[in-house]
Length: 136
Image (cartoon, rainbow, N blue to C red; front, side, top):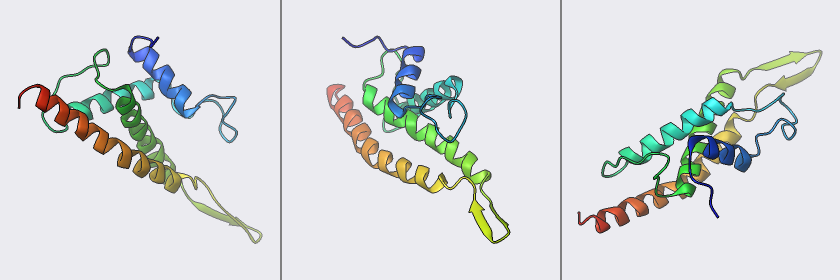
């Protein structure tokens, strides 16, 4: 049985899906993304869906596709973290040894591109299906 979709439940689902738990994050202390930021990204995801194609007015409780909401939320999270990593990226050298901090920003962009390539057609399909059902 599926748990009713609420912001708290969905934030927990997103965190579980991306496995953002302190005990699994080997290079950072704690969670990478706060629950409040995940919640904000859920809001951005819902807004993006509602503004794509014909305007809709879905909320968390009646969102038509949990999978689409998950993917859109994750892309917004990755963009936020990726921007931070890009902003904090720099090279340093000491005694012939060179290192670059925050090398993951490009990897985040790769994940964003992959997820977007999957979710955009799914989102369009759902919106077309809704248009047909609504007699548009």
